[in-house]
Image 1 (spheres, rainbow, N blue to C red):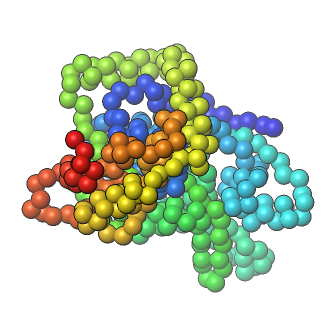
Image 2 (image 1 turned 60 degrees about the horizontal axis):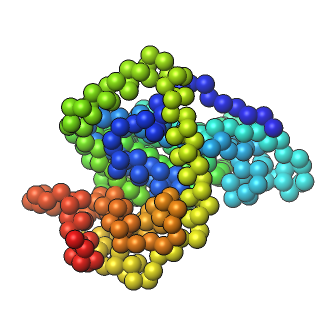
Length: 349
């Protein structure tokens, strides 16, 4: 079995100072991708992109069918392209290789064809073949799709990304020809609120919403600057210093993925989650679902098997703050509002 590796050094995830809220959101999504991705909003220069790119180093390599543009899973039919499925049906032997979990950056000026892929109509008409050129969604299958400045992206394109992320499939239709392929990925978006907000119905589709603030303490700021300088001076040596911590965290994530199915949440807690969503006037049921999934992922990450009110308190702000209706006269921060209602429902101090 071959193994491809990436030689470009990435800043180690475990060496990042602060920004705990964002790190937790990313880890929980990696444990359970069904949470539905993360939207990260924060000031310029707070390390949003650095943290997301550092995440990919924590993820274990994945087995794929060699030379398949969709990173097809050789064992799971749900994650196979039609070509690979055909080979399996015909009992052909699949050539398997290992690659690093894909991390695809979506450029701001990307067109729909670049994102979804395009059908070569000329070839289809002249040769009678479905000539499909896969796009970024195909490359992101079984990995992470990162959109920096997502609030500046065309609304229609954001819609396409969210639809694929939710369904796990991408369908391209041109001139009566239709192509469908797996596109199961964790969608991570980041942006600066000064440059405009996302529409509420698009924001609601992101599972979690992390807010990043500039670190105020001078000693922490100095530490961040020093870390960056050390990394730039000698990336390999800096990465080796954190190698053991990185491996431990990867192991914890893998263990949590396996443990996730065993985690239980009582009916009473589910009822209270729904009561909080109801009191906050959250539209739809996504808030209830995501809070439940995120709390279970947290419990699995901590190696336990039963969800407690404290676990719900840890994740509920991240899951609900972006789902509240915006009131222009409201002076209270939406995250604080979620916490107040939680304390009232749980009689929690």
